[in-house]
Amino acid sequence: MLENILPHAMLKTKPNLELRIRTLKMDWTIIYDMLSGKDNSSFGWDEHRQMVVVEDAVWNYSHKAASQFRHRSFSYYDQLTSIYAKDRATRNDA
Image 1: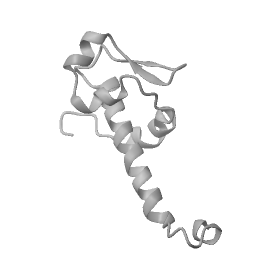
Image 2 (image 1 turned 45 degrees about the vertical axis):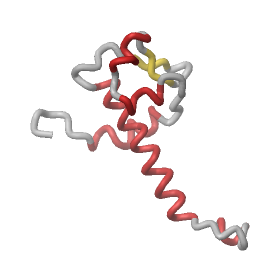
Image 3 (image 1 turned 135 degrees about the horizontal axis):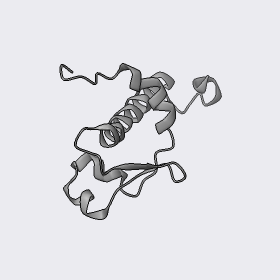
Image 4 (image 1 turned 180 degrees about the vertical axis):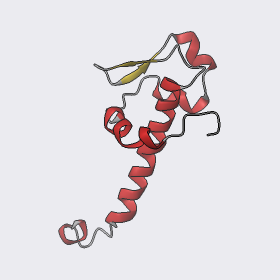
C-alpha cells in the first residue's frame, strides 16, 4: 500500500514494520525487566505519564540500557505487556 501511495520513495513496508516491531519489543523488554525483575523493587510505573519512576540515586546504578527511559515515556507498555508477557519465562529454569 505504501509503495502505491509513494511509488518513487523506494520505501519497503515490510522491513520497516519488522524493524519497528523489533525495536518496540526490545524497549518493552528493558522496561518489563526493570519493573518485574527480582532485584528491581524500587522501580515503579507512572500510569499518567506512561514512564518508569524511581529515585535519582537508583538511575546511577541501574543497567545502562535502562537509562534511556529516565525521561522518556513509553505509551505502548500496557498493550505490549498483554501481547508479550504471557510468553516470557519466569521460573528459575528460564
